[in-house]
Length: 483
Image (cartoon, rainbow, N blue to C red):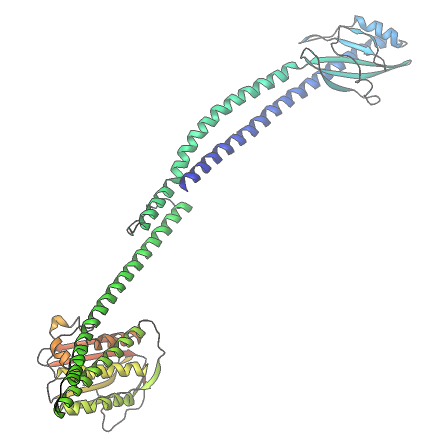
């Protein structure tokens, strides 16, 4: 493509230059020729006027001259100019020669007959020998008729000069075309060099080298094209990086999910095969069914959380004003039976404010945080669920008295499938998806999730949301001041 454009540009430059110079040179030579021809016409008219003046002087001495007498008297008239003696001829209306001085190389045929009455004129005549003449004639009115005064002037030199000028100009045009061709080659190569670099960079990008950039010089259209290419390459590289990262995350996600699903499936298949193949007591049946039921519930929980994560990646959820008191009471009520089984006391402190949220998703956040707090504690102890305003937003806070999280693990606990204590988490039915799901939900609300923890003392998870609307403070079972 660049090569074709190169030759198009080269040929266009040479052709335009040649046409412009040819037209200009032709016009200049033609204008010069016409100016010279006009001077020759003026000169032949001046000579004709001089001859008329001389004949008028002759008539002044003898006004009774007839045409024949004047023609005979004209033989003695001589007019000299810088080009020599001027020859002339006197003829009648039929073109017959009556007198004159010298010899005119052209005949009178056609000129005198075509002159308007009382006016002079001229014609150009080319002879067989190649000579070209201007032939002029003017009328003289006498008593016995009209005489025509004719004279001529050779202009062969004008045409010869014009022909020589054309030949010289043609030779000059050949030299000029060669010089313009060389300059056009250099100019086309210089102009198309950025396009060549751009084409080469494009081919390398097509081969997978996304680091390609082109040098941008100047501010013309090619420079703008190069800048647009660099911008496109940057965006493609960024998007490809994002796609690679997404593919890598997806691969890791699938690998982790396959690993997590293997253990419960193995347990379910093992206990089912035991029930199918061997006679068992009622206690063994109940125990095996319990294992199968528990592992099945864990698989169900795992698939639900995975589905939530996939859905959250591609959907936007509208937010609604939700009373925080009723919302947190519902979440606490859901988790109360589980806490009672382990002897854990759940305390609730909430301010009566209204928060903009998607209630189903935020309920998932609260239940996950409360369930994580439950799993972090052995038996007994207290978990505190709080909701209060903070600045222009609100904070939902879960505090436990569990084992805590090592400082080096805090940055990774919100990654999918990451678990601080994998053996304990699996024993309690954990999948490592809970906090990752919570983080994504909070981000969809435009909020932040922060985790503070100390080993052996417990963990505090704070969810910051914005857009709450405060109402009157309630009194009673729930308090109004944050801990």
